[in-house]
Image (cartoon, rainbow, N blue to C red; front, side, top):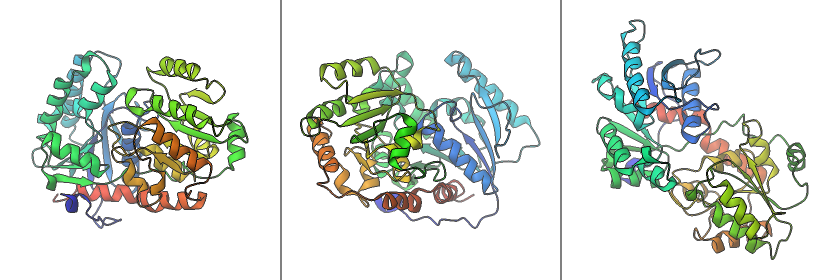
Length: 399
């Protein structure tokens, strides 16, 4: 399995322009999220390289505007779920009736729920690739999303959709193993291709002090930044405990937490209980324009995830901005750092291990890559121009 999953794909396809039908979720940045960002950047990069891309989704823009892709808005995200699924099917049927649209050379699905109602409508002779961004049922169960997130229903939907797909793309070997072991997908159908980063948006174009000044941060305190949804599996409670431990040696340490979620009040109460009022700031939702500035303003970024972290997009965004990143040994995150900065992977997910690695990094007791080294590593390995061509080869394989 490993040999197949880590196969080397050529950086540039020699095939003629292709017609690709893609089904995503919402539209980034209106609906922020890792999946939405991935689809947003993949489809635009493919279209910029002359492929014809039709994107189906939920709550997409009414007009293409300057985007080089065609939008097929299946439904509104604000109506009830049954209506959403019904509308998705009917609107996709109407899309297929349009005689002017080219028959796709490849179909690329990204989310099981909205793939289900159109599954039997997809052309039988066109290869279907599913991008497995994570085990939807397991993630929802851990985050306690609500009645809709009933584990058995979501997993049934996933398995139904996956049974119709010809091949799969995963962002890491760790998620390849989950897809193989938990969903029974044959190893030869699984292709590992990491996520990409927009190297023009995420770049080191400010000094650390300039970035901090723009954001109103402390100019000279040791600063850590994390961009996370405020939910259980992200490990923010462990990170706060780690900061309280580090504070004994580094009293002026400062942690900036970007993101929103249901645990905000719980985490804020933890900050008070640990006496970290002057050491931690919750930034809330960070606008897209501010995210590269926040990465550049930090001495170090951190991903303290506890489970189900299939890739670690924030890590490569940070590296592209020239800022080193530290992570727990969870999911696909170590796959990013092992070839580059293995000392920045904590020994475990526990607060003590996180505190130990953070303290050593801040005090210079472990090697820290330079700004240029971080930038070069991201550009050479995670540039969307390169990643999109690898994805394209899998989508069009055998077509």
